[in-house]
Amino acid sequence: MAIVQPSVFLKLQSGKLTGDQVLKSQKKLKDLEGVFQDEQIRAALPQESLIYEVQAFMPIAEGKSGGLFFGNSTIYPGKIGAEYHMTRGHFHSNLDTGEYYWGVKGEGILIMMDEDRNVWAEEMSEGSVHYIPGKVAHRVANVGEELLVFNACWPSDAGHDYATIAEKGFAARLVEVDGEPKLVDS
Ligand code: PAN
Ligand code: ZN
Image 1 (tube, rainbow, N blue to C red):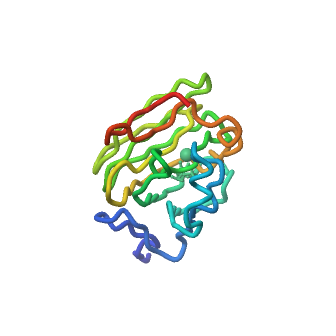
Image 2 (cartoon, rainbow, N blue to C red):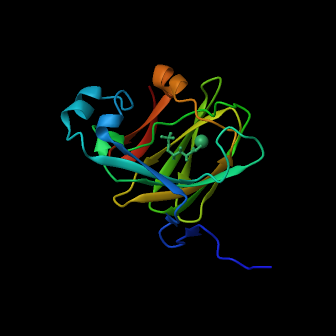
Image 3 (cartoon, rainbow, N blue to C red):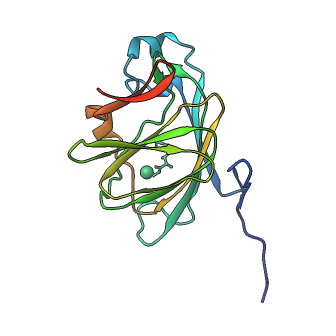
């Protein structure tokens, strides 16, 4: 019986995944139309600017139940007007599925919203652990001057519903007020 090497490694310092099966995607400013409050500013900034990247290890087909996916997200620092760089955010299509996020480096804020549009947020930093319950939309903003890196683990049948957030947004936005992040009604 052979003892083999794992096919994927997690670099603990950087949170990055390595291995042939790791998928990568990038979101540039041009991919984030309508995500930020000030669409005019977003449209006027250099469209090739990288805002965030995601790596994912998806060892079974997406949509199949019973499996788990593992990911890494890196959000570059910066703001669009007063609003921090952030992920699009989503509900899971299979609404009841939860997710874990954990902070690897940098300073972030995880913004969550339930189906009644109640919004709350948690500070993210190295080693912080965040349980995102089912039926809760989630997005992360980088509120620091450095890269924000976090890892995630979610069920293989979760799926991503981006349309609901694209249509209705979150009920609150994270903006800088007097140099501090503030969650304000949108
Ligand atoms: C994460 C997110 C990742 C990027 O892996 O997909 O941080 O955010 P958006 O998907 O909202 O662009 C996750 O929550 N997976 O379920
Ligand atoms: Zn998710």
